[in-house]
Image 1 (cartoon, rainbow, N blue to C red):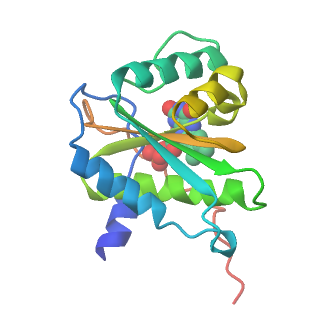
Image 2 (image 1 turned 180 degrees about the horizontal axis):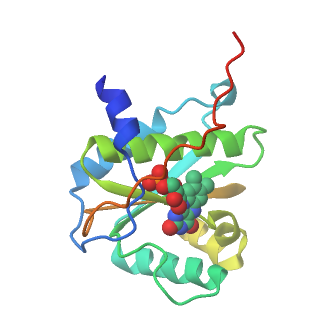
Length: 173
Ligand SMILES: Cc1cc2nc3c(=O)[nH]c(=O)nc-3n(C[C@H](O)[C@H](O)[C@H](O)COP(=O)(O)O)c2cc1C
């Protein structure tokens, strides 16, 4: 199997992490892979906010948990959160941002780092607190939250993969 196919095949969502921080140069490599995702008309509508600051990471966790209606950590202890948002003015922004998310998760797998898509970014950045947070980071514009790609070192055994459903692919030859 080629390396890319192996990476795609072996990536699994990691739902338990060690507290150890991912080295900055690895975070940067993963983030850069995100920036190389294709986008509708090449408009690069997405942005990535790479959060390694523990205080901010914990604040995002609290905001996300509140949307879910729980008090558990929706980031499973992962020390890094890459928030993907995309410019609402661009018609393909949700697709663009989703492809960035896929690149991030695959690049993490390539680098031996665990990852998982954590949802509710849309609701998070529709809130007054979310908007204020972006503003405080100097991010201007009307962005929709697409997802959080959490990163870290997996704790314990990988989750068992689900079999692919029988009706996934239809060939029209
Ligand atoms: C759009 C999307 C939203 C997701 N949201 C969450 C989430 O909020 N919390 C979570 O634990 N996993 C989330 N996941 C991860 C899925 O649970 C995971 O991809 C699925 O169980 C399949 O496992 P695999 O990625 O290991 O193949 C999300 C995945 C996608 C694609």
